[in-house]
Picture (cartoon, rainbow, N blue to C red):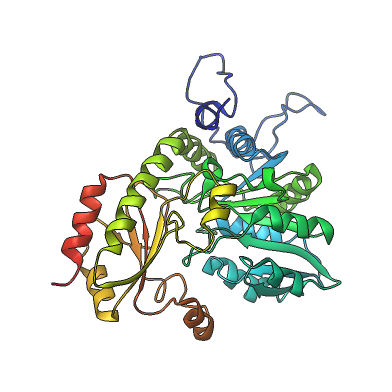
Length: 378
Ligand SMILES: *Cc1c(COP(=O)(O)O)cnc(C)c1O
């Protein structure tokens, strides 16, 4: 099956006795036992639920893993992943990670004795230089948020293998439709299902997919213990969302190219970051490891006043956090997602008060561009 078909049929085609084409939502907390010592395979929904298993199976097949676990949010998946490491472990992470992950690392992982060291993972030498005797994992996001730096996944996998590290990739931005890190040598893939997988800005979800069933067993043990699992209804929303993942990603990318090109023509815009530009520093790596460039565009205006005016003036486009849905959203990383990132790091990355991030939706590109056009100051 090709990937767009997997989006529709990936969890298998076996309707129950009614023939229902849409898989049922098992909205139940517990399951009755047939007799003492006999179980249907389900006991209690925190430990396992058929609707959640359907969602997990779909993501597992899409990412090409051996097992998957569905969580209540992306952060719950990141948090479970960090529980794999004992005190004294050292982890190298991309220095432009999702703000929530950085917050979790500095408030929880550090307290648990796990040391996180940030490196520019788009530069392979930078990674090698950070490896120590107690380094256990390499945690990357590619492309990064919001500066859209790209890391070579296969090169990281080679370093990880040589040094017995786990390679963890947050694949939220490109989704398995455009990028499948496990097939490039990664060990674990993490998703915020809240974004493109769900795709409609209407539900929170998270996933962890692994190549190795031992890892998934440990993750399930942690998830069942702490209770960070995805609810039956939200599992169903994700399954439903993924049915149109291929269509949405294609349309989003088509729109993004047009919007990014248009932004380049504006005199109020100093620079536009989009991985699909041929002059993007890692354009060749993107082309090699991904089947598409996605729908995130960041841009720097020439003044903070212009940035604020755009945010205040957009009409159809929502000024809202998050990304990956049908609706175009614009965010101000400086005040929103990256407010907790130390100022020095933020400045170095160019995430200043002139910097905006767009998550392009599936509307008509002309309407997205005209809304931006009317939002720019006269
Ligand atoms: C949103 C996001 C997360 C966290 O996911 P939630 O569903 O909001 O908990 C993690 N990583 C990336 C790249 C994200 O964009």
